[in-house]
Image 1 (cartoon, rainbow, N blue to C red):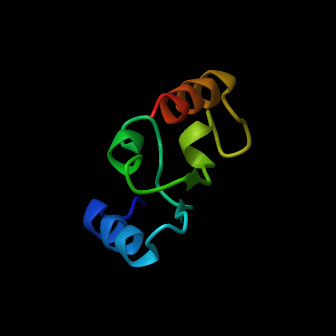
Image 2 (cartoon, rainbow, N blue to C red):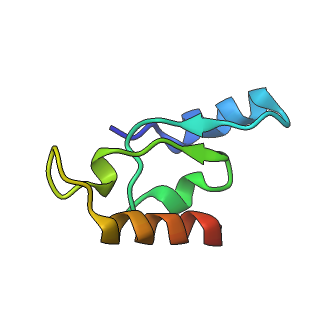
Length: 69
């Protein structure tokens, strides 16, 4: 599940200039809210069609959204 935006905001502030990575709960529906605070995203279920199958379309869409920033 995704962390709260406030938790991520506070972690980002505490890190100062150091980059923050989020490793849970990121997908196309919520990534925009985290972009101001995180430099890296570890994503699995948010880019899968099933537990064992990655979705090329979801991967590309999420990558475009993140790189567009």
